[in-house]
Each structure stands twice: as C-alpha cells, then as structure tokens.
Image (cartoon, rainbow, N blue to C red; front, side):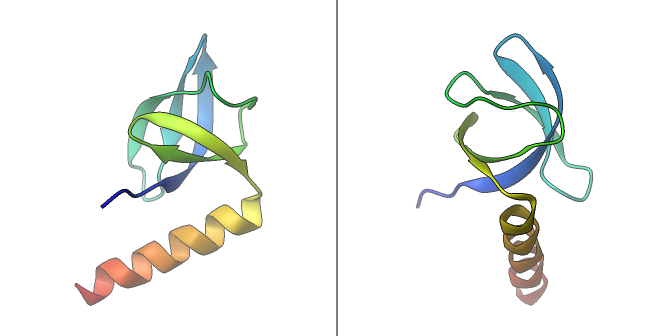
Length: 72
C-alpha cells in the first residue's frame, strides 16, 4: 500500500526540508520536486514532497488520519 501524508514545512535547507506531520512528528524530506516555502503544506510520499496542498486540504486530511488512528 502506498500512502502520502500531508505535512507542514518548518524549514528548508537546499533540497531538504524539515516538515511536521502533525502531533510534532518531525522528519526531513526532499522538496526538489515542488516549489515550496516555509509554512506551506506538502504531500509526502517515500521521503519526497510530491505536491503542494492548501492549508485546508492538509488540515482536513490530517484530521481524518487522526480519526482513523484512534479507531485502530
């Protein structure tokens, strides 16, 4: 199964960015495929940001993920 998870860009250094997947889960991802700035939301798959999302799309998807995880 392939999953892409929204994350908020916290900082950028070259082609890498630190992103927050919500709940203070911070990871470094490659942002060379997208044009982003700090504060943007991106969709991350396999360590790569593959799409820029609106804040509303990202927050709704993160809310749904949290809801799903509470049911497990």
